[in-house]
Length: 378
Image 1 (cartoon, rainbow, N blue to C red):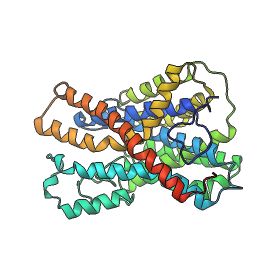
Image 2: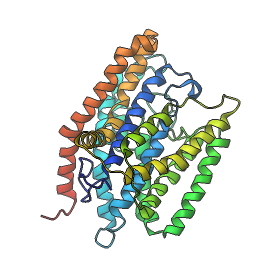
Image 3: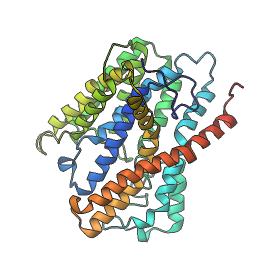
Image 4: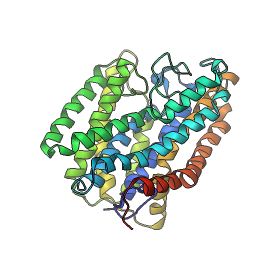
């Protein structure tokens, strides 16, 4: 097993992390960034490049369930409910705040025909910043960008809203369930997710970012399957011998994300079936693979640790610049080839910014909060 590295993701936890799983999380975060870049040129999900990049969120939820189960399932005799919630807050919330602040700082540079930011008052922007930083969702029609997002300054914050729900579900319900009961929960949630993907309105599981009925249903089902499935995997996990687990897993994530849309607008169920297979079958296998594998050599170990360290900051800081990039592309009527220098600058710049946020903000803030809020042994 590659529980051999304590990375920057682990401040409030004492157990070492699964190094390969950290690396795979970083690969998935990179696919999300690329998926969002190509959104500027898509007219719908049907013609999106890196078409299934949204599935990375389901992978994140599953990894979260696995890691939370591994890190906390055996601590409840000595850890209070309050301390657990503090630990999750320390781990998650600093980047929620910085993502909102970055989004607010460049908001007025993002104007285009799709959203007129010039009409938004400074007062409204400050209120939106406060709401986003506190992870309070905006309702459709009352958010400042006008496209229905829960968090108009930093769209990906929606998944953190659900991550906090997962924290509460685990603390109050899931951790108390027997393994057999957890199996039933996972199977029922898998059926619900499959029904939404195959027979639902979109033909996919790309939902959760808005407070509309369909998005709430889709986002909830994504969480209710993937997080408990990861938790279940942590309980039944027995490693198998795997060589090259990180590279196999990375290539699998890239391929799963890059597969073009399956079926057209008249056959939405085909793509829904693909999404279901990815989330219910392939992702659990990838988590099992990553947890079983062991990094060999300094290069792979360093790559996994770096990707793991920047994965969450990258996910939380890149999207404000996607808004900006989108506005630039639309205002200039650019093709992807014409915008390629900007796209490359966005991806590389987001990685650098994520690393700077990690080292100059996230790690120091988490250290400070850990000392102030937790009972840390001397």
